[in-house]
Image (cartoon, rainbow, N blue to C red; front, side, top):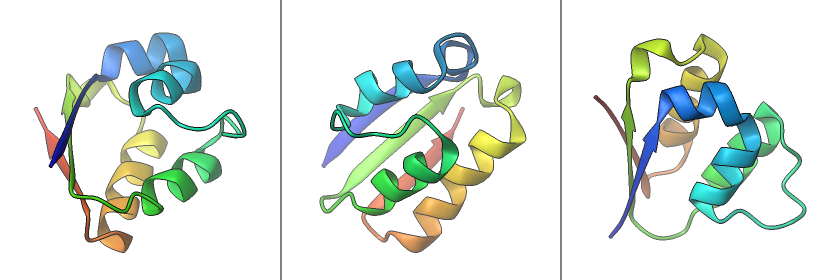
Amino acid sequence: MRIIKIDAELINNGGHDYIKDVFNFPDYYGGNLDALYDCLTEIGIDCEVIIFNHKVLSGDFLDTFIDASIENSFLKIILK
């Protein structure tokens, strides 16, 4: 299982560049919520994403992570 720890404050500061680095998304990652959803739903191995400081994360980002986890059974989102 792959475990990814991300800090919502760094998402707010670094946006999609931070997410791309943490998830090691491909160069063609579009840097928007649709691209984030697409890449998260394409994860094909068990992956647990722990989001620290989730209360500071914008609702759109949070909804995208949760919606992707509903669509992709390999993806589990944990809010801390």
